[in-house]
Length: 147
Image 1 (tube, rainbow, N blue to C red):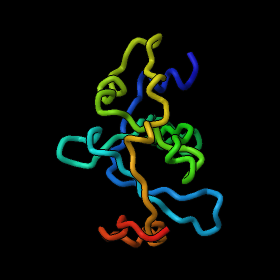
Image 2 (cartoon, rainbow, N blue to C red):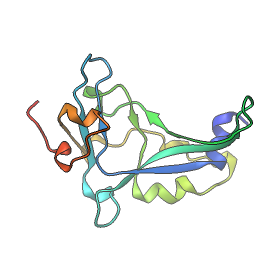
Image 3 (cartoon, helix red, strand yellow):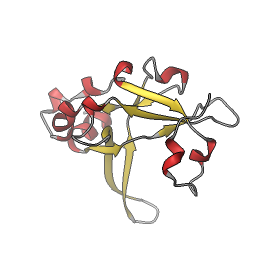
Image 4 (cartoon, helix red, strand yellow):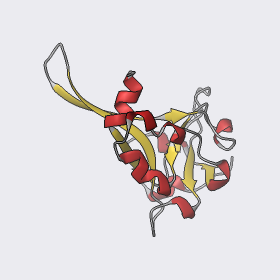
């Protein structure tokens, strides 16, 4: 069994978001954009949604320290994202959360979920460059600015 299959079989996780930001990787001063989903695929009464991810607990061979690591799985960008970034996180539909999180038969891994989220079910808009500075934490950071 390859490493990805082992990880998918045993260690699927999700990461919850409501309005993550992203930047264009090819610009010197990236212009961030905020992403959201149209509400039909968000948790009831919220704007939260989930990314597909993998986690692993492992021991560092040099220090013998036990580490827990996590990664968000990415895929090709959809039509909305391709003008913003060259990849996008795998966003799960609410109806797929349980299937992603439930360990299953290794011959039936949920790799079909590792696809771009439909562009027509997403929204994106440009925001201030202040989003890229961790010291900034204000609600108005996600308000649209002129492009």
